[in-house]
Length: 189
Image 1 (cartoon, rainbow, N blue to C red):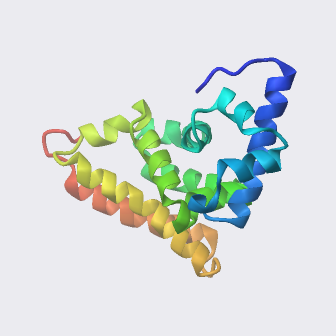
Image 2 (cartoon, rainbow, N blue to C red):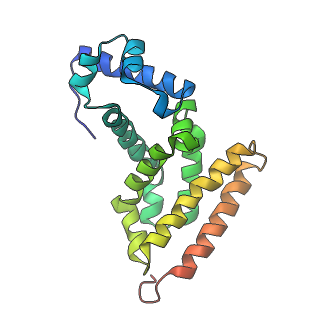
């Protein structure tokens, strides 16, 4: 995570940029957001933006890092304990607690790059590295892990027709059964 100035003016500027970006996220797809539009909405000039960020992608990377940290706060302990059901339930609880902007960034197909970056950050964390060490084919586990979010996304698209508890229970069963089937015999705990 980046170290930011404690200067009140800098904090206000960053907060203004964030608010403007979040408003734009709710209105547009990422490829439709320009620095000019962002800075106008934030009430700053482009030069001020570039004092703090090298690009819009650089700015978004900071938000991604924050979300990775939040997710790991919610599920890191479960991952360390190999508690797959706990990981899934707490991840879904995290997604449910997200505001509208966060949910769009993590679940909207137009922001899939954002979700993919966050996923990479979570899966590369020390909390999750042990999941991959216990298998012969970590890339398959990674792909399987990503399906957890797709289950949640489909649940959202369907209007949350299935009760939340059943969603988490069924997703846990699918993931646990599949994961246990690919554990390397020499690496089972």
